[in-house]
Image (cartoon, rainbow, N blue to C red; front, side, top):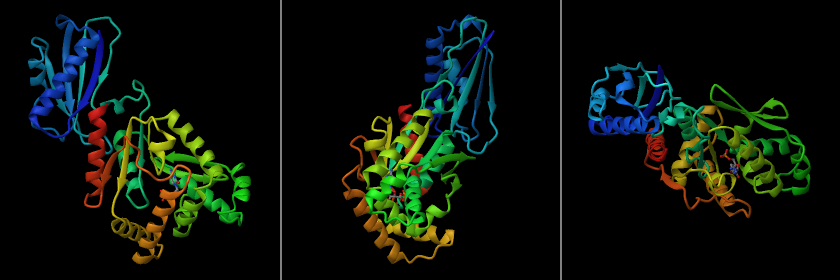
Amino acid sequence: MKAIRGATTVNSDSAEEIKESVKELLTEIKTQNALNPDEIVCVTFSNTSDLHSFYPAKAAREAGFYSAPLFSALEPEIDGALKKCIRVMILTESNEQPKHVYLRGAAGLRRDLTNIINIALDGPAGSGKSTVSKLIAKKLNILCLDTGAMYRACALKCVQSKIPVTDEKSVNEIISVIDITVKHENGVQHTYLDGKDVSEDIRKPEISMLASTVSALGCVRTKMVQLQREIAKQTSCIVDGRDIGTNVLPNAPFKFFLTASPEVRAKRRADENLQKGFKSSYEEVLADVIKRDEQDASRKIAPLKQADDAILVDSSKMSIEQVVDFIINKIQEKV
Ligand code: DC
């Protein structure tokens, strides 16, 4: 006896959508496994507790599973689990190697069966990239790489070495031997500079402008981009930055450009600073945001720019949850 497994997701708790998704999943399983109905022992469904409006077993009958016993179960709520998800397990007497089928974003549940997924998320300072990418990474069970943290670590290194961030020759010397690593602990990125965890130090407001300036240097970008590509090659991840869709991962299958008005972004950053215990006035933060936008967008190498094939998301009037749902839905449409 063999177990064929599969899963799919829906965008909303709509009876029609659940029915269609289950039928699509079962049809795909039948085709890929050349399933003989007489060999099916039983079919078990389970779905997440956010779906109530349709009984998946009913869709199975409509998809031609007439005689097999059907079971259905409701899954308990598990933090971080993929939402609006329907799973199936079909026991069959066939001895063929089973082909498991994961559709509509459910592929993220089986990293062992799927290819690496890279998502590029670019946008200006304060657009909410890092918050959004952390939440998406958690939902899709993938890694989240904050590339701004790496440029911030370069800026911190210059400060520690008492080198002006505009002195390309001296920066080049330290960049050639700089030791920056990122580690993910419980889904949280920790940035290490020369073996020391500098995750908090690099968030200080004075580092922001220095990071923007140092990131314009060719020697810095070459080294950081190489590191970023190595990480993205090895694991499914959402990478946030300024040039991910245009330069670091130009072939990423999913690209988003997240923005918001400078005023909204400045307000978010000022609130964030306050929460972290750094004092900053809204006016100062707004001036910094505008200056950084100009600097990041006007530099010669890999400027901040929306990739032609990136989806624009203006979050000025959207909540974080709305942005996350929008992006996840777009991803699930394509997977
Ligand atoms: O996202 P952030 O505010 O932590 O980024 C700090 C600076 O680093 C930003 O002003 C520009 C630079 N940066 C970059 O040039 N390219 C990236 N991919 C990410 C950040």
